[in-house]
Amino acid sequence: MLTPWLSWICALLLIAGLYGGLIYAPPDYQQGESFRIIYVHVPSAWMSMFVYVLMATAGGVGLIWHIKIAEVFAKSCAPLGASFTFLALATGSLWGKPMWGTWWVWDARLTSELILLFLYLGYMALQSAFDDRRVAARASAVLALVGLINIPIIHYSVEWWSTLHQGATVTKLDAPSIHIDMLIPLLIMALAFKLYFFTIVLIRSRTEILEYECNSKWVSDLLNETEVSK
Amino acid sequence: MWRDIILAFRHRAELFNPLIFFTMVIVLFPFAFGSDIGLLNRVMPGTIWITALLATNLSLEGIFRSDFDDGSIEQIILSGYPLTLLVIAKITAHWCLTGLPLIIIAMFTAFLLSFPEHVLQTLFFTLLLGTPVLSLIGAVAVALTIGLRSGGMLLSLIILPLYMPILIFAMLAVENKMAGMSVDAELYFLSGMLVLAMTLAPLATASSLRIRMS
Amino acid sequence: MVVQEFFHMGGYAFYVWTSYALTAVVLIFNVVQPLIRKRKSKRDLIMRLRRNLR
Picture 1 (cartoon, rainbow over the protein chains, first blue to last red):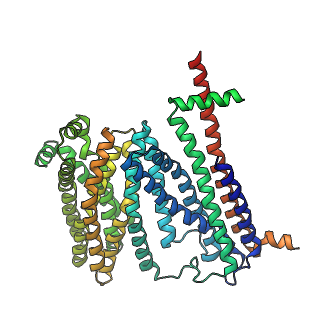
Picture 2: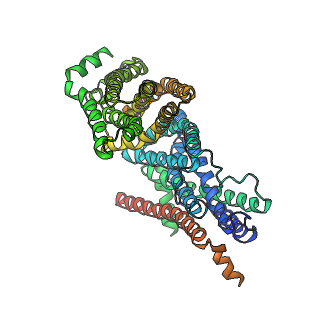
Picture 3: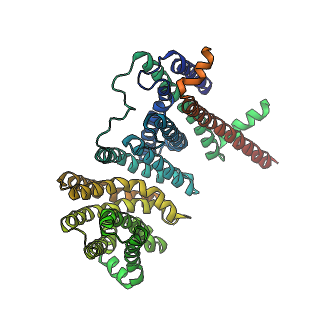
């Protein structure tokens, strides 16, 4: 239905973004070629937060109005969000090595990203601890919402903490102004990541619904059809 | 709530276990770092706070355990008695039984280890503001995980990230005090978190319990 | 020698290419894993239906 379209657009955008990021964009005058990591790092970081908010919102919607699709959607978000968070951390660390000289700096963003990863892992652990899908979805939705309230607090506290400890080092990650030739591929990549996320979430949710509704009539009808057509 | 406290006094061993744990872990640290007073004073507040986190974490399961096991939570939900009230009472009892004694012991040990007094005061305030938040947030997580297989590990997994900001602010306050700076901002922030947790956590706990019972 | 220069990445080849490779691996895994699961659960369901029909 929608997934082939989404995936094709996503693939196109990915190629365009990769081309733009790796070839078209000029090297940074300060960081040389190493800044090209930005094109995978920043979209992942953006997505990691975006997905969490989306997941918690979907969870909340499912909690309040008992909408099954929202619950399924929230559940499908979690592994993807965790992957994005992991990517943001790993690429950030790979970027940090040549730039800061170490793999890991207790920088505010990296640290809050790490805590975000913990939140995702906790969510997934809770999600898989229940046998009843319905209870699992609603219980983890509560956790996601609590986490959502906590995220700004965590971010703020970590920022405060790291400025105190490092004497306000200007992180090289936030380039104050970015050249337009560098920005366009970045935005394309961000868009590609977003579409990628929605494509996968659709696939995941559909599987989830299929497993969830395995006893209902329409699933058996659908499967009978596909079997006949084979 | 009084019933909880009285009950807890009947199970004296359970009541004292977290406290003994707390004291023992604090005693472990000098063994690990050596008995240099200067160094110990530097790591002392952090030690006390981390140990407080762990002790709370370990004792949390007890909040709803007995009521969950004998089904009285289910009864209360069915009877229409406001669950939030019950939850507030439970959390208060938990804090009185672990948080409060913990603060006293922490003060006592810190005092014995010749911790500078003006910093001790700040440490006291951070603990006073922080430990109720630990109990409050913990209650939500306990309500979600109680009665599950490997619930204890899962509980720590979901709870520790949520505890991090409290730890950070408490430590900031203590460090600022050590450096001779004002600690108002951190203490205000901790109070803010306490108020936020007090308003939201009982509701969240009650709804999680309902979800678990449905 | 443009291609070589491209792969060299101004001396940062290791970091740049590792991060891109890592991203690729994770993204591909996230595509493949749900697809495998989808196929598996569909097959399970069909098996079950067949069993029920009999």
